Length: 111
Length: 110
Image 1 (cartoon, rainbow over the protein chains, first blue to last red):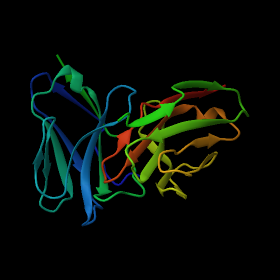
Image 2 (image 1 turned 90 degrees about the vertical axis):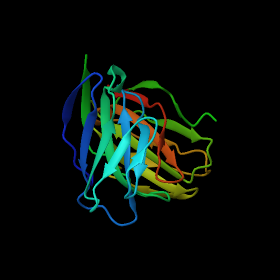
Image 3 (image 1 turned 120 degrees about the horizontal axis):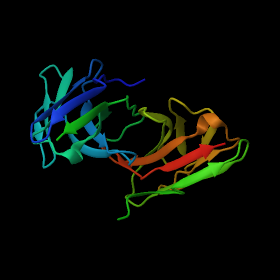
Image 4 (image 1 turned 135 degrees about the horizontal axis):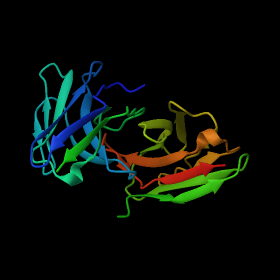
């Protein structure tokens, strides 16, 4: 079973920031937080990852709480093309054995 | 680099038939994975491999077999296709924790 929990769905107005939460209740010290998204029926696409510091790249920002039990993916200016299912997973940084995805959060960006 | 390549993209099988889903990667990744995704659901791990010659079961391995004779290839075998195996199958590879996915194989068993 997935080790993370996410809300099943969220809506966001186009141009607004989308904040997607994730709970990592069983994350261990050597595991990173990874976020992926899946647009329609394509293969999931990597977005961002982090260990304990906040991270930012060209796609998104990642906020990880100090106890690492929760994280938030932020899409600063959501567009219609960001409508997708977003997954958060816990993964060791140097390769991984079992990588379990849950059902993710379906984000719908509304015009 | 082509990344992760899956073939075929679509396939229809009759109950009881066999087939192999092909997956190859050109990134020299040690880790490879097979997932299935049923309509409206998340991804479930079928099998994974940590290197050539080493494979292990994931969450839903029943009805499937894998092999890993080379670093590049990780085929998934269905021996006796059943309607419950109708799904979209994704292959992925990684060197670190970052996964690279193929574009998927849509399989229907009728």
